[in-house]
Length: 89
Image 1: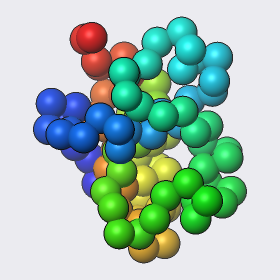
Image 2: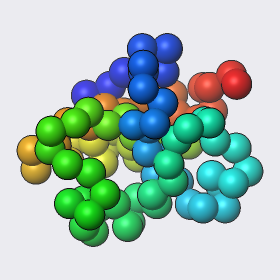
Image 3: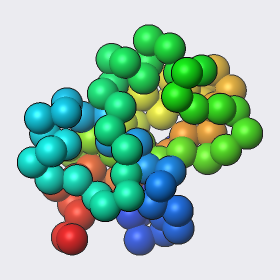
């Protein structure tokens, strides 16, 4: 599932799955950084199945792949279209 950044109402539910280095260079205020490998290895530690989450990566392709996997596991995740490169903040 994909969503445009403009339609994300709760920025605190944005999970930036890029590396900490990339996150520190540029990120969305209010987002949280959980690198992809950490999130995907044990999602129950970081997210729950009762809430919506919005994943963002560099261009939107990696976050889409992760969202698809997490959704198949019963989570409610959306990939932000175009990734951080598409955000003008």
